[in-house]
Length: 465
Image 1 (cartoon, rainbow, N blue to C red):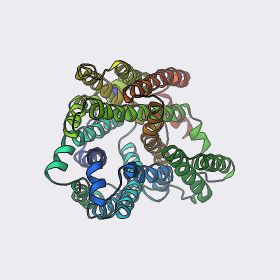
Image 2 (image 1 turned 180 degrees about the vertical axis):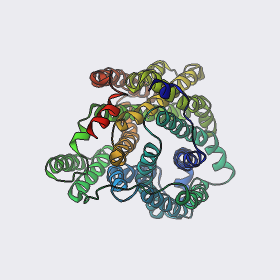
Image 3 (image 1 turned 135 degrees about the vertical axis):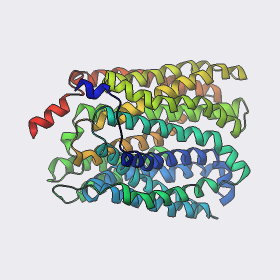
Image 4 (image 1 turned 45 degrees about the horizontal axis):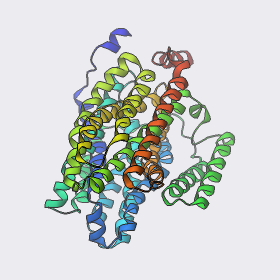
């Protein structure tokens, strides 16, 4: 066992091509998201969308991406992961064409909604294909490390090139760039990736699917629009979902999975990792453009250059997990993310603030990606293959919900102050406090299983067999 863990993983030629397909899809979605963020003002102007309605370009994507992810992960388990992945890629190509040719706000928002739904279909299926193609242990950890590195690489490439592409060509390139990549993936996937099989086909938990999807949509909408009515509806629906899962014979989310410390605390960690970092990036974008008066291209460069640290962090994180275990690496990476954010509380209104910001981004992105890789490994460890779609659906849902709610929550905190700079400082203070409290909670939550975290799943599986 020790030899297997320490020796470098080796991949067959077919496995390398599978990695190119699945990791390439994630890289494309990450880069596209970053490019479109840079292009938001131009997109709104191009279709006649008012300034106050611009957040809906992001929200129209985030709502279905978060709301349908858990359902899609289970559908992938039941009806085929490759089938769901291909469906998501096909829908992405159609939605991107629709968005690229959009001339009205309505068409653009429909395209963004379809893109969000395509993400909900493809990402859990893609992750579960990765976790079932590569066996648990050093091989899977390295693959998930590469996945985290390429997701961050996509963000970095989007930040570096987004402003340039939009300036030289058009905001429509942010949509059209997806189409050829999606077509290539659709053409190659059937020849490289075999369809997953469920040993015993069970019926889908329709009441659970309706209540959890409706509940997530309502809660995310409530946070974005600050709607108390939507919040109440969401809580009621999620409570109904919990009761349904206790009674149904074929639950959408078996409670034995939700009660696992690795699943529970792993997903809580993911919520904090993505909520706090996404909000920090948004607040620093406001700081760079509204206070230091940099244009979008310079802002992209400031984020992109330190973002190169994130590209390096993915492979390193995989090795750290193999050596120290996810229980140490997950809170450790999150602690680095929080420590890097802490100095930003003291930034001023002059450009000397860059002396704090750039090193903090460099260190913070490294910790952030390390946390992402550990977070991806933690909730999927020790689960049988037939439940990997559900597990990866949960992790993807957590990520999408976190990305959606982080900005409005910390923006609301910032808005309580008279000046924008004071508001940014207060929001970052809350960010750091939540992060460090969460580090302690995650460490304690995973502690009872620290000694058997890596080896116990294999032992349990052997005993159960």
